[in-house]
Image 1 (cartoon, rainbow, N blue to C red):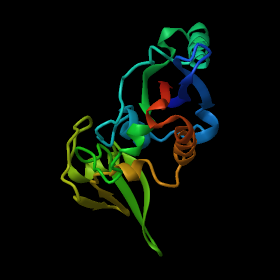
Image 2: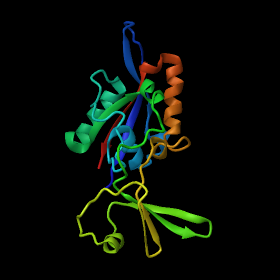
Image 3: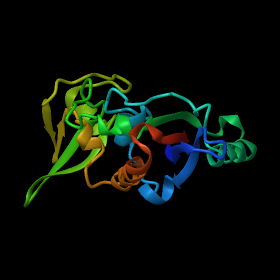
Image 4: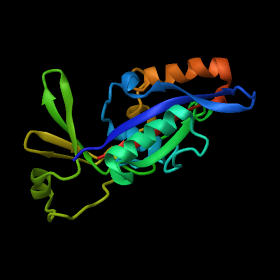
Amino acid sequence: MGTDISGFIEYRAPGNDREPIWFGAHDLSPLNDDVRNYDAFGCLFGVRNYANFRPLAADRGIPSDASGELSARFAQLAEWYGEDGFHSATWITWAEVKAVDWDEPAEKPDSRLHEYRQTPGGLRMTGKSSWSAEFAEGVGLERGDVREWPVGAEWLIGDTLYRSVTLRRSDAVTETGEWRPVWEAMKGLAEQHGDENVRLVVWFDD
């Protein structure tokens, strides 16, 4: 079973009584096309963090001052699916996103070995695997025997090259990938309302 992300971008501005409150701005889904990218989920929010990043904003929960739009969305979700229908809710401000060092490496190597095949144009990555029967047989692992391999270690087994890799944040959240429209929407709101007054609230379901 896979894990999917949902979310809402909010901004804070004076309300009718002039006290600042949060307003809903954009649903996440049309911005990132519902892409299921576990490396990004782990890097940003600590969910499915196989790549072993230090999460930027994990398990903060739903903000107590959530916008009316977001509160209504959660009430609807709870009615449809129950309180256990989603998990790992959290949020991150545009100020925090702006401050990210995208060159920062994960805290340790990816838990999955990266797999490559030789092509006429050179090595081509074909996937990542937490467990490969072919690899296990080749190196003498028993099923369920999980190890942390040194970065850069490689094994050529059959026609597949297995490599231990440490990802950087920019590998997980690429400059031109599915998160770019999200950041652009947040940046546009921040130019009007301030970096600390724009946030992305997310939650996950399996």
